[in-house]
Image (cartoon, rainbow, N blue to C red):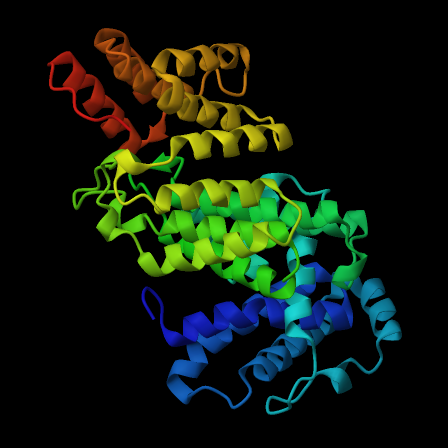
Length: 421
């Protein structure tokens, strides 16, 4: 197993199952989550030395349950809460399973319910992401902090506040059928954001963060397995597979960014492309159309072209036009402008960028300046393109993107040009 030991991988997989089992039994999400983290730490220390138990999940549930009992007994400052809790569950010790007991519980359903709980609408987006990675992904607070290049204290605070907010909102661990389509959409959006941050890091000196992309794909697989008839769950997984397939060709050995148009497509992951293409083809013929499916279809069109010059841009433009009707966001309009330029010429694409200058969501974003630079370069306006590349470089907080944009500007300034992308 690349990047982690077999024990770490198993613990990451079991974390949401164990937490879901405890919360379903006892409630108290915040206390259960703390207890599970302690159990995971104990397993990480003990299992490599003493061997893995016959029932790892049961072992973790037992240890976490005992941690909760000890905490409830020893917390003198919350005596009144202890009393009421034990009055509601006087057989707490009896229901904690033995380490070798076969725990009869629906771990898949628990994982889905836990995901939905972490994506509760009362939580702000950064808190949803941090809580999902901690409670469902099994990442430690330190791992999440490293992934987002934030202080560990900041992530810990987000997680603590998120758990308190869930408690204040009266959020309950309910079976998935009672959750709305909006709740499922929020959950998928969190996974989408986690993947995007891993695929193109918004800051720092690394282009990609494989720990986030792999975790997002793992969770998206779990959601698709639990919701096999949900077209958008399938679409999101297909999109991730097709996008991550380019991973090996997106940068050079020195970390330099390689744009899509210049990538060595033989280095793309053919297996991931085949799986993603098959999934999105099957889904679009059977489920109501949604934004993730359309984005996956666009990625599939890119993937089926053996050379950049063979890309079916007319089909991509048509898909973006449908996508914009469903989700008229600035990012969709920005990408549609590129497709328009590839079909109808750079001036047509530049015209579509003009309304975005007045949109505060994109006016100061480096992507708008970078796309404008690319289209100006296509139009042969090298001086204007170089100025836009330089402007985009000043706006981005990603060092690989900044280096790429500065290099594009320098090449145009010296007349070297080349292929932009």
